[in-house]
Structure formats: structure tokens, C-alpha cells
Image 1 (tube, rainbow, N blue to C red):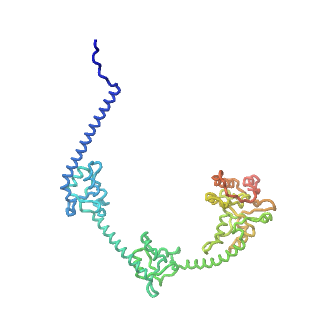
Image 2 (cartoon, one colour):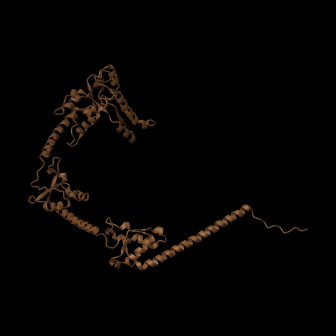
Image 3 (tube, rainbow, N blue to C red):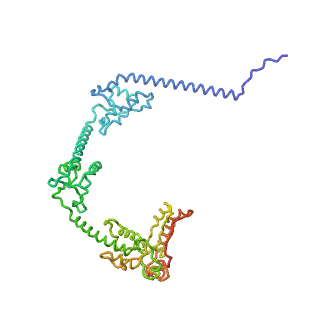
Length: 459
């Protein structure tokens, strides 16, 4: 017979499961949307009710309400937020701590940052948002008095500054009463005042407790009265009765006399010790002559060169020649090998900035000088000692042999190796690059180390 009607087509089970899950998710989102709409509507109703109840109470925020004795202060920025935002979490509690002074009252200095509300409005705000503390219209009398004093002081100071500026524009005559102040006072008094300086005459006091009259200028009595008011710790120094410190005057005369002597000394030493001044090496014939040589500390030599080349008379002579920097502190022995007595790293003209920086980190340790040069250096001082009394490091040059340390002078091998390792480390950055630094040194010579001397019974 005829077959019955065909069964309706069925979707695959996987498709049916996916559809059911999608429908369930859509219904969940719809319910969530309805809940969110309901929450927003509830917040809107709550805010509308809050504003409807609060609006009649905000009459104390008007300027006329400042006369109300029971009004309360709130921050103006917070008040605006509480009236505009929906969510309480976005508004936050009443932050009255921001407008409270250190005495627990409304801060008069923040009057432009706060607004008045009625007590009923204040209670409504605290009930809804929380916060505090409660600040009434009384304000802080202590802060008000302090602010008035500050304003009066500022006005008085401004008047004194203007008066002092006008008084300083007219220097006193010889017949007028005048007072001494530092020479830079007219240009710097305003800066000193801003920096809190209380003594305008402090720069005139010398190390002996007297006064440096030579470094002073005169101002009128009117200008001094304003100065005393602005700089209360200043000492009155009348022009007629203030004398210079006797000790400072004697020192000044001594320096002037010494400067004249230093000028002659510089000229003589520049002529006699031109090689040392120009940092030139000793000629080969001097090294082979067998005459005694001395090692001078390069730091002392640099100070001596500055003395000779100084353009002013304030640079002092470094004193007698010295080899102190060439002995190690631990053992008191020489820590520079004879073969490196005149070593110097010098950058060539093509050296980079980095290579010149390396050169600066490797300054010369010592400098060779002849006995004649050392005698000239010692004789330059009025009470100069002979070279043999200065404990200089001496060398012996014997013909064609390289210079060696004089007998009895010990070499500290360990300290020498440490110093040489430091020099090698400074050049480590240039191992793989072309290096323009060149090492100039005398030929290495034999020297007995401290350890060898100990073994031989000499130390």
C-alpha cells in the first residue's frame, strides 16, 4: 500500500543545544538589562527626592544667609558634585577636613573654597553621604588674627622696601651721619631679604671678630633705619667711629709685600727652570752623565707650575719640593718603578673625547729633576732646607745604564703592581679599537724590592 507521510526533518542535536544555550543567554541579558534600568530609575527617583527635599534647605547658601548664626560650611566642590552626580559612591562623604584649620574650626584662608548651607540641609547631606566634621559660621578667631598680623607685616615690609630703595639712591655727603654696609648691599639687599638673611653687616665681620672696613660702603642714616627694620640682627657701624681690624690690616700688608716678592720669584724661576715648567723630558746626555737625580711628586710639581703661571698674586707657593706622594702609606717604600719614573699617557691630536678622558684618569705620578734644579727650588724659600734634608726619592744614573733607586731606598713591589694594574684597567675599553694614546717612559732599570731587601737583611 501507500506509505504514510514522511516525518518532519529534525535539526542535529548539536544545533539544538547551541540554540537553547543562546536563548538562555539572551534571556539572562534581558533580565540584567531590566534590573539595570530599574536600578537607574531608582537612583533617579532617589536623587529627585533628595533634591526636592534639599532645595528649600539650600537657601542658607545664598549671600544673605551668611548672617544666619547656625549655618554650616561644606566644601564648594563637593556640594556641586552632590547635586550633579547620581551614584552616592561617586560623590563620597562630606570632606570637611579639607576646609578645617589646625584649631578645628573653619579655615578663614579657604573662604573661597567653601559654601554655607542651613543646619537642616547639613543634616540631610550627612544622612545620605556621611562625613564631617560639622563646621559652624564662627570660624577660627586665632587664624583670623594671624592672617591680619601677616597682612599688616607684609604691608609694612613693602613700605620699608620702597623707602630703603629710595634712600639708597642718594649717597650721604661727607658731613652727613653715615653707616657702613657691604659694598654689594645696594645690589643684593632685596635678594638677602627674600632669602631670610637677618644680618646685613655679617659679610663685614672678619675672622678675628673685627670689621673689614676696606670692603664697605656708606649709606645715609635714613637708609640705615630702614635697613635695621628689614635686617634686625645687623650691627650699627658709624662711619666716624668704626675702625678696621688691626690683625686683618697687618695680614693685608704682609700679603702685598709677599705678592711683590712672589713676582720676582716667579720671573727668576721661569727663567732658570724652563724645562720643568714646559714638562720636557731630561736630555739623554743628562741621564748618561752619572749625576744624581730626584723624583718629585707630580702633584707638588703641578702646584708649583700653577704658582709660576698664575696671573694674580693670590696663588701661594706650594712649599719645599716633595716626594711624599710616591711612597705607599702601608710600608713607607717607593711605589713607582724606576722604569716608570717619567711615564705619562698623552693623547695625540686625533684622540677622541673618550680617549682624552682616559688620559685624565692616568695623570703622571712623578717627575725627574736634576740636583741643580732641586737646589733652585729649595733656595726659593727664605727658610728652605737643603735637598738632603727633605727626604726626596733619589736616583743614581750610571753612564749608559738606566737610572736606579739610590742605595738604601726600597721599592714596594706589591703596591707597584697594584698601581700598574689600575692603569691597565683604565685602558681596557680600548683593546679592540685604534688607540691614539702613547706611553712615554724612560728605559726600565733594576731596583731592589722590599722583599729582596728583607731577605738580604737590609730592612
